[in-house]
Image 1 (tube, rainbow, N blue to C red):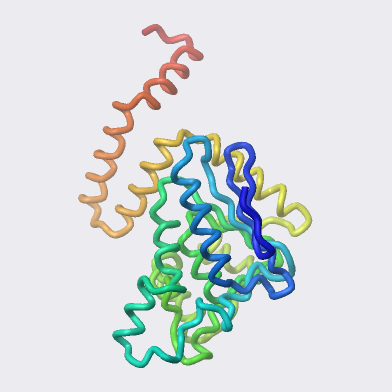
Image 2 (cartoon, rainbow, N blue to C red):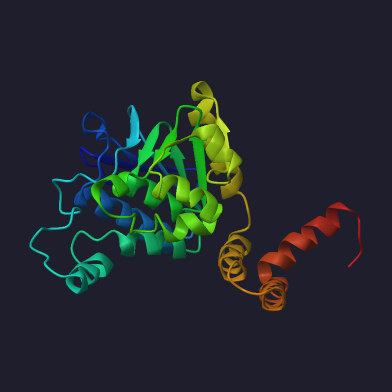
Length: 266
């Protein structure tokens, strides 16, 4: 698989692993790192044998956010809000398409924070399906101190995940959060001891990779849909999703095997 001085990509057991390795620069994100991750997401989407993407990092930071000297940092040559919004959505250096792709790919994406996760890297994490933390991890969005708000999902996705109550903590008060509190408020799914973090994360991904792929894909889409619907329409999404699944070969094969194990007759 592809490698770089700032990241490496490998695969095993149906899990595609993308690792930030720019530890000497606190894994501050650059355009090549973002493009490398984009390629990994495309690889995940296109290959049937890959079931899960795991994003992690090495060093004393998961990431300090974007490298302010890289193309990911807005140019001062942009002179109007309209021009900035156009760049923000799809200009060279915009991370929005990557985050949308992570959110939209019909396979699970896991991100594992062994240490501090800040700014743009935090926003990247919010687009992933699962966020796992070591006890040493912490989270912050420093954009407020620089005169802005998090605009790559750090406001919209964060509020959707933890609600306005804790979004205010990060954005308005510009305060950090340790891993245990992040678990309590629903920002991360689990917190593991530092000593066993890598093996615990891998075990989680192994279990995820064993789940039926069509079911996981449909579940990812359905969960996103029902989050923004009223009760009745959400139930309709459930009915549509499950009816499509039970008519498919995956369900018939798995249910048939279960019935056979239980001794049921056809």
